[in-house]
Image (tube, rainbow, N blue to C red):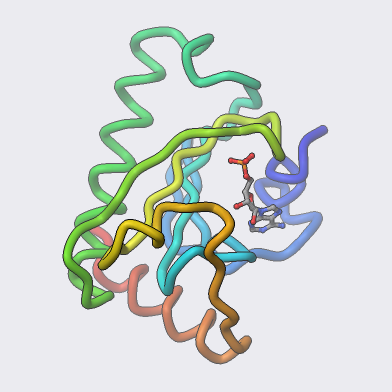
Length: 129
Ligand code: AMP
């Protein structure tokens, strides 16, 4: 069972920003930038291009809605999107509020307080439609 499945089942906590029957979005615990969010299908699959076309499209649709909420919640030039999965083998889309190219580099990290995580999650969640 992946660490993200444990988040989905509530076994471990997360700063959740959005959820429906098939997807969950929560803040990355080691963010590249403020508001860095992960969008995860509840059905555990390792690689994104092993998803069915239908599940892939649904993941992109959900990510689109989360990105719109992020744009309303975090001041940035644009939302960057990336899929890697080398650390956690459970499909996830990284959505990163980006101002400079290094925001999309996964060696570039910011430290946030618990209150900042909570405030960001509340704001993104309130803007999710
Ligand atoms: P990757 O699999 O290379 O796309 O990276 C996995 C991402 O998941 C990293 O950015 C981690 O910071 C993030 N991550 C790992 N564990 C957690 C967790 N418990 N809650 C939130 N994000 C996590």
